Length: 243
Image (tube, rainbow, N blue to C red; front, side, top):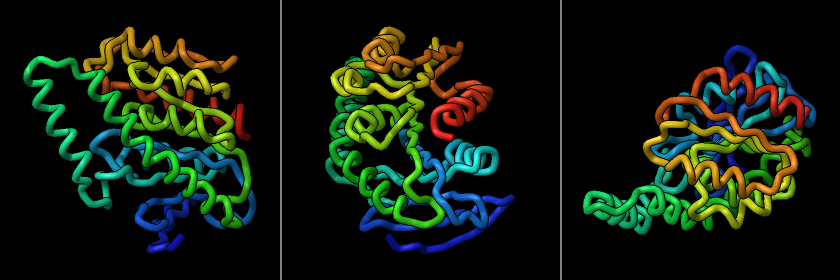
C-alpha cells in the first residue's frame, strides 16, 4: 500500500492510496492511534471512490461513530483506466436494451462478472488497511447499493470478517445463490418505484438472504431517490452491530 496524499477536515483524516493497481481512499478520525470498526463503502455505477454520497457517508461514520471508512474505484471507474472487456459488454448491453431486451438481467449478469475481479481486490484492501495502527483489526461492515449491492453480495458472502451489511437497489437475478450464504445482520434498501430493478427482483433478493436478522426499508420513488433519513438509520445499524 502506497499513500499518495493526506488532508484533514472537521476532525476527519483523508488518505489517498494505491494498492497495486487499485486506487482508494481511507478516512479515519484525526489523531486516531488504535483499532476501530471499519466500513468498506461500495460506490454505484458510473461513480467513484469520492462520489458525493460516498464522501458524505464516510465523514459521518468517522465524525459521529469514530469508525474508519475505506472506498476504492471499481474497474473502469474513477482513477482506473477503461476496461476493454467491460466496456464492450456495456456497449452490447445498451444495444440489446434498445432492441427491446430487459435491462435488469443484463445488469445482473454484468455485475456478477465484475465481482469475480472485485471480491479478491476488496479482500486485499481489507488485509492492507487493517494492518495500519490507526485502523487495526476491529470489526468490519459493508455498505453498498446499486452496483455496490451487485458486487457487495458476493463479497459479503465470501468475506467472514464482515459482521454487518447495508445492501439494496439490487435484484436476485444473479445474486440469489451468494445471498443464501449471507448470515450476518443486513439492512436492505429498496425504492418502490425503481425503474432499473423490478420490485419483485428486489424482494426476491431480500428473501434470499439467510440472515436471521434482516430488515427491509422500502421507500417510494425512483432508483436514485433514497431518502436522506436512511443514512441516519444506517449509522444506527452499524453502531449497534460494530461498536
